[in-house]
Image 1 (cartoon, one colour):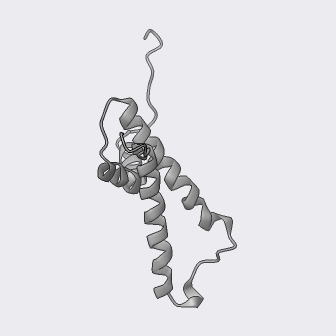
Image 2 (tube, rainbow, N blue to C red):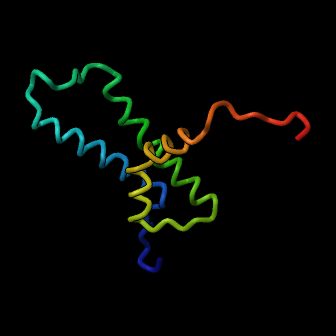
Length: 103
């Protein structure tokens, strides 16, 4: 980086992607009648704004720590889709994982 600028990491791009998708959902609320909008004072509404970026950044970190190279656009996609990817992985587990005591 000869120009002295620090480029954001894949994890940071993933976090930004996760925040962006949450903001898009927030912007869509302008199309919903006021009587049907969520109660913004309820903490449960704000939980995804914290959890989604953490999941996106964590998944991107797992990719990078595994030796994968995430270009910025791919990292943004990982951040946006992280909850879906993790839910898909979790749904593939058929019950509790059994551990062999002799292992």
